[in-house]
Image (cartoon, rainbow, N blue to C red; front, side):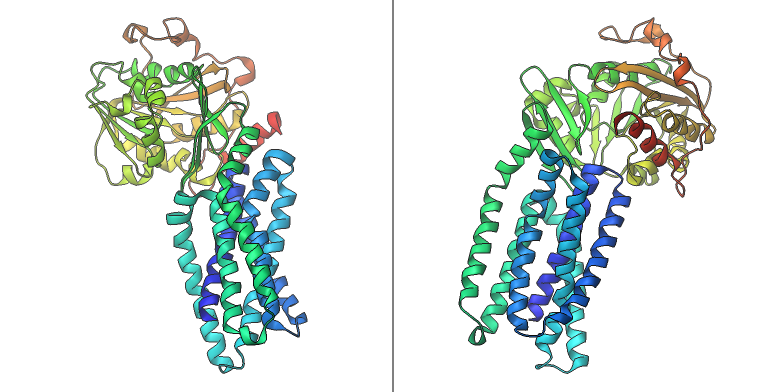
Length: 493
C-alpha cells in the first residue's frame, strides 16, 4: 500500500502539471494559469478529503473504483481539453470541470489509504509512512514530468500513461486484498486499461485530427518540448511556424520582417565583426546577417535545442534559411539568454533580440530594464541593439513600454515599424550608446523589401501610432504583460 501511495502521489501531481501546462499553451500567461489550476486543484482535493468520510463500508473496493475513475477522467483529460479548445471552442468550462473532478477524487485517496492501513500500523506510524511516500512521490513527479514525459511522450500520451499507472495501482491493491474482493473488479480494471492503452496507441491520430482543426495547412512537424510546442505547417510552396499556436513567421512574407529586423541597424554601424542573436532559432535573422561579408562570427543563443535542430536538419527549412545555421561563422548555444549574458564577458558589435512576444512572465523578464541593462554591458561603444517589439498599432502601450524600458538604461532609442501581412503593422526598436542612423549605401544588394526609400520611411509613425504614456517594464513589476494583453484583446477577443 505504501508503493500505491507513492504511485498515486506521482499521478496526482502530474495531472496538475498537465492541466496547467495545457492551459498555458492555449491561453498564454503561464504564471496566471498555473496558479489558477493549482489553486482550484488543491481546493478540490480538500473537498475530496472531506467527502471521503461518507465512504463507510467496503473501503478497499471503493479505493479501487476510485483509481479506475481517476484513470479515466485524468488519463483522458488532455484529449478532452484539446478537443474542447479545437472543436467545441469553449475551453475554460472544461478546464475547470476537469480540474475540480480530478482534484476531488485525488483528495479522497490519502484519507482512504490511512483508513485501510489503520489495522496494520499505529496511527503515528501510519500517518508518517503515508505522508512520507506521498511527498517523495511528488518530488519524483516534479522531475519525471519535464525531464522524461513531456519531451518523450508529449501531453496526450503522458496523460494516458499516468492513467495507466492508476489502473496499475487498482490492480496492485486488488492483488493485496484479493481474498476479500470480488473478482468482477478485475474485469473492470481490464476494461479501463484497454481503453487507456487504445487511447495511448491512437493518440497520434487524435493529435493529427486536432491539428487539422487548429491549422488550415498540412502539419509537417509538431513537437512539444519542455519549453513550448513547435508546429510547422505548409506545402511545397509555403511554410508557417507556430509556437504554442501563435504564428511566428510565414514563408510568403517573412522577408519583410527579417529584413526590417536586421538591415536598418546593421547598415548604421561601421564595424560588424561579432554579432549576438538572442532567439531567432529558425535561422532567418542569421540568414540576413550573413549577407554582410565583413561579419566574422555570429553567436546564436536560443533556449530550445529542438528549434535549432529542426532548422539545421530539415531540407525544406534549410532552403528557407539558406542553411544559415550550418554556416562556419555561426555558433549555436542552447541556453537561457539571461544566464548566457551573466556568464559571458564578450563584447558584440550588434545584438539582435528576436524573441516571441511577451505574453507570459518568463518572456516579459527578457523585455525588462534589468535585462536591457545586462545587454548594454555586452554592446560595443559604437554598436547597435535591435529588438522586435510587437505591434505599435495593435498593442501601442506594450510597444512604447519596450521603447521606454530600453531608453531607461541610457541608450539612445530609434523606434520603427513595418507592415508584414501575416502579423499586420509590426514594431522594432533600434538602440545605441551614441547617436546612429541607417545608411542606405551600406545595404546588401539582394534584398526584397528594404531599400533607400523604405529604410527612411519606417522610422516615421502615423497619427494612430504616436507615443503614449506608459511605464517601463521592470523585473519586479511587469506592466508590459498588462499592456500586451489589453492591446491584443481589444482587437481579437
